[in-house]
Length: 431
Image (cartoon, rainbow, N blue to C red; front, side, top):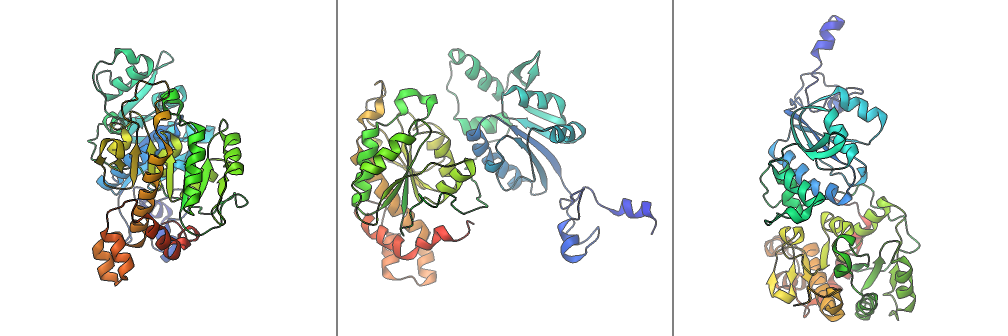
């Protein structure tokens, strides 16, 4: 066979084709085009989000939707946060000369810029795509590509929110609308490749559930979304009293207070309160992944916990109609309402106008929600449903736990079962 015929035999539109190295079917089996693994690529999509790690996490729901609707789509993601990109993305690019040159010479079926960062908008101007959604640069300034579309609302709410007179969808729905896709309650998710904890000197070695207390407030909500530090200290003490391990996470503004709480807390033997300071984003991801329940206000760490599939207790003052409620998780004791799934939203009643509304949310109420989440975590870990218990022949203790609604009453049973059955989970690879 002539060289030209050999070159033409290579199927460059196959989903397995790498371009600069052998494809997996050829490496494994010596297969040549068109082999039984051949599957033509249907489309190539570019997604751009540089500035916001929260939006990168939320966009994993979009990535999953693209992949579900079209398994053969090729997804390229340009970002400053490669650690947070969903595993379903085919290529992750950073903002460097090589990546920008490659994008300039490529052709996409669709490009979605979810970011108003000028760098992201400049890339949007540069790339060639049949369909473009989101934002681009016009006279050096970010503007929406469709001035009557969903991106226009996001643009106005960012630069002049006082002009918005109608109710806006939550942030996750807004991402779907910006891309022109119907939202079907998709949930952000993140897969951890490295399950090791680098902060081994501070990480608890005790068996059983670990509660992460994220003391960092979200600046976008101002003082209304900051829980007083004395409440955090009391909550840590209450968790320790029932022999559950808790870990204090925060930011540069709360690290010192976290260590002070850990030092002053009268921990029971074997159930210490530890303050942990992640060294970088990868370390934070690993730390959150090794926790079982997260207590937090709104923010990137909370989004990370949800994307990793953790039980969550959300301390919120006006978030019932936001993206957290729309994820379909949890329970709001103050409103006597329930969400299915793995989260609780705790809010003080009638205090939304206070300078610090969360000051009225007492640790006792949050502690009750934590115990409920521990109970629900045990039922999820041991047997996701009653039929699973029956099929696997689990004992009466496990069946009883699965049949019982999560509540404070059976929290102690859940704690003991978690300790005896699933303490090994933090030492096995994350699926």
